[in-house]
Length: 264
Image (cartoon, rainbow, N blue to C red; front, top):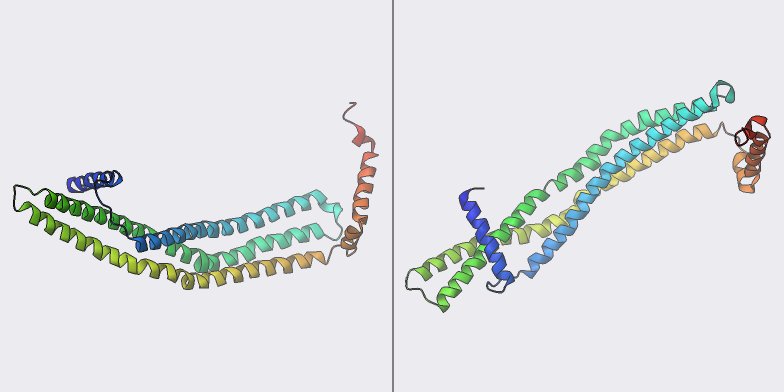
């Protein structure tokens, strides 16, 4: 920060303190405050959307990777003699295809149509925040000069040129502030209103990508399901599946090796 910038920062800090103690009148712009609150709400939501959009892609990869690992483990658990029809191996193959093909095919379109547009939208926020900050600084400068003029009017200085100089500086500060304030007051609502048409294509793309992933997953799992026992679902609904599991557990308990441990 330059020496001039440092002095301005100190003066503005002093003006803020004087406002809090009631020694300097603060300009109130209710309409701008409303628009700034609307912008803050949108900014928070957009940043969260950007984070969650990235998280969705990461979660998609993590889920299919977990499916692949569990498929590999199940196949290893059954071993060569466990499934004569090779269903565990086929299940692993299908899950690996879902991970290698479907997710990777969706990665590029998702980034292009969802993640990148949201990120570009959020990239405007630092510049907008800088403009809002600059407006606040110029408002402090204007209020400070107004206060200075008021004091000179109430208590004239021995220097006859002091009041005209202060009035000129106050007018310049007013014009700088009002120009920036008008720009922000006009453009902030426009930016906020544009969020909907801007996001609409990405929202549509997100739904279509999710639909495709679900359809691909369903179709691949349906191929595996045809090799499973068709009676399993009905047995589960009737409670017979639990009985089958309990029967196998009982047979395991009856094995001599299963009784070893506590008394060994």
